[in-house]
Image 1 (cartoon, rainbow, N blue to C red):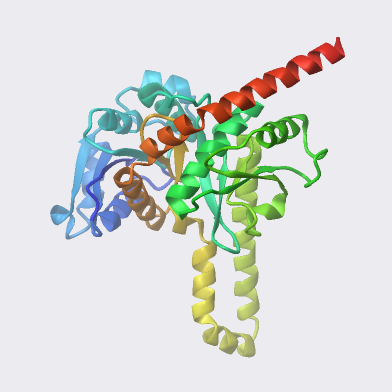
Image 2 (tube, helix red, strand yellow):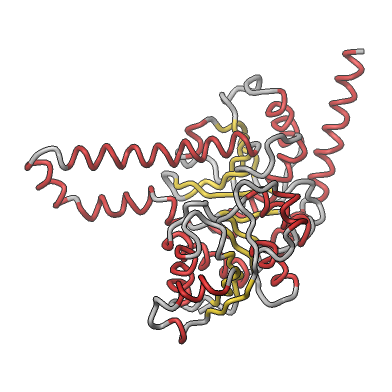
Length: 358
């Protein structure tokens, strides 16, 4: 049982508030305390469908407005201060909750993190992080959507935060970090990735080992614990990985129902197929945290199922109990000299390039 309380935006996802309410009920049944934030009447009606709701650690906080997927993130957070999403962050700031969570507009979640929590010292741009299953465990990937365009120094900070998250989530004491590129040779990639490669190669972090360029297979071959990239590329890569998983699942279902012999074989392999389905199902892994802000925030997929939301709530509670944000702050402080060296090296390289061009 967790001592953490999670403020869940009940009007964020595509199936709101039913998916959020059912997910909250599932998580509450295993000891997670949840504040459902949004329009009280529909939340109460959805909650009343569960006979045991009165005995669960679930409360409702009324918030009359919601931020939609069509809203401009920054403008909506300012124009709708009483909406369900910013109210979740306010509850954390007031100490009534330990983390904010939503399956809503991810840009608005980033805006709430910046406006309500502020950035951690040593972070220029927060990042959204996820974990993909690989041969040996998991690969932590960031950024997956917060920053479409990045500078080399942002990647260095992503490496520090990603390594800290890999220690928290997957128990990797000194993670191997790679930069996503189209080849392993030094000359591969773009001007941005080559600059990042040079920065990470020029100094040594006390918290991770820089392992060079990671090609696409690096997400899954187990050679990297953390892969850093910009939010545009990371988001595309994540969606391709999820779509590939769904396609493989479709092929398997088609193959095992093709004829009687295949169906009999499928019965024998049912436990193996069940394990494969769990590993390939994004809902198993819950949500993605927003790293780099001075508070705990978790972002669910817009189409998150109750199963996914329940898993996300449990993970969010664990992140509060185990002090994820404090661990990030400590890691950033411990790597301040490393980041400063990278920044100085990058500045010197830029000055040299300008002089050469001149």
